[in-house]
Amino acid sequence: MTDAEWSQRVRLAAAYRIAALEGMDDGVFNHFSCAVPGEPQHFLLKPFGPLFSEVTASGLIKVDAEGRVVAGEGEWEPTAFHIHARIHAGVPRARCIFHTHMPYATALASLADMRLLPVNQSSLRFVRRTAYLENYGGLVLDDGEANRIVEALARYDVLLMANHGVTVIGDDIEGCVYDLHYLEWACRDQYLVYASGQPPRLIPDAVVARTAEQMIEEKRMAKANHFAAMLRRLDAVNPGYDR
Image 1 (cartoon, one colour):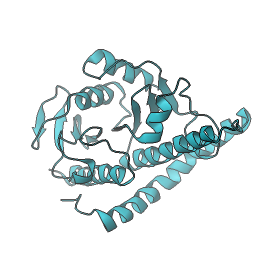
Image 2: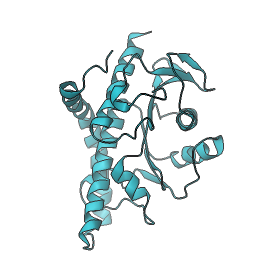
Image 3: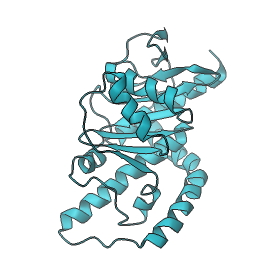
Image 4: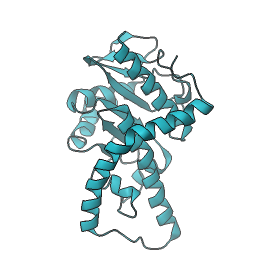
């Protein structure tokens, strides 16, 4: 194993545990993956069975595009393979793929109007970067349903999946951890606005467009610091991901 692969394994295992720490996991289900450095035909994935909070670097499995486990012990969960294999193959910039049923994003995706609204500054990280899969098609167990996800992500980094959850893609783990955290916060804030019973105060389109561009630069500047902060919190309460 190369040093680059081990580093990727450690950071991906940490990402799983960070998500668990923030209440974004779903028992033994949900899944994150990353392409293996120098091996674009392979990706790393949690085997089916461990909780997010139990994932370790050495416990990740390495999978190829046909579903063969080429390194590690265990098997993939069927929807995990179909979602991640198709996105890795069909969206080359998606070196990392995080799929969760995190509470507030999933609640928003369960509403008749599932659009993320420009209700505050946090939401402006996503209103111009989010695609919507408007119709629930059942479990992702074939290429047909997986291809709908790929098509939806062709020009976007975030996908709200009706009656299902969310998928975030990116070129590095730090960026996906950043997006997952702040997306859940944005969905939480919108939920609280709805819960107030008062009409939302929407940010004007011109301000949305300008600030959305600023937020892209903010992510580039902040994602490494955000990941480092999440690691400090993780190391204090649930170390051992780097085994």
